[in-house]
Figure 1 (cartoon, rainbow, N blue to C red):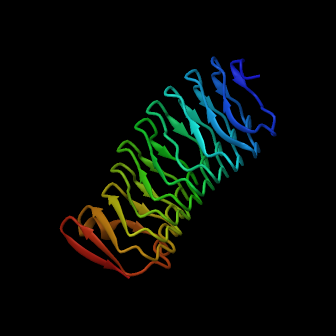
Figure 2 (tube, rainbow, N blue to C red):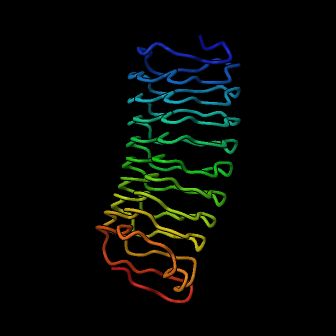
Figure 3 (cartoon, one colour):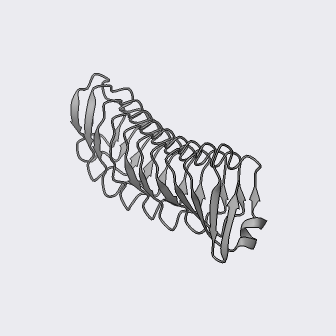
Length: 239
């Protein structure tokens, strides 16, 4: 029943488009999980929260309209939505849980709004078609494996304020040619750019001295080619 304050669960054999009724404020955990034949969803303005695994494995979901007052998206909310090609995250959004869009293999672009300051673990892992991502300047944390195996991602700008890039954050981004890193970084962790075979340039917004002082795990650029690091006072080469 979609007329209550919380939508708890719909039948898994729901087919085609679904328009959730007004006054629903919370889409509960796994409310639409495994709805194989669901193709589109429209949520009313009243919805403030989307729970954990809410649309998990809705493998034919192609579009969803999120309300302008949405505040949270739970862990694994859209995991495995393999046909989802685009999604507009509203400016009201404050948090997006870990693995929320993992395995959305057709998702092509995403803009992280100002209210989301943490890009959680494995948020876009395995989004093989993701070509463009815009991280707002207020992002201060980019989690482990956040963009792991985003094989179509061409370039990315990590915002100033991020201090650490951890395990496999951009590993397997085989199309990545350029990445911009802030001088607020203090460390590059294990396998950060592992397998980024087309990476040509790192634009580092600090000096060569700051780059050399930064902690870098021995595996941070494993299986990556010779990379030019463009610093504010000159260039370096990483083998």
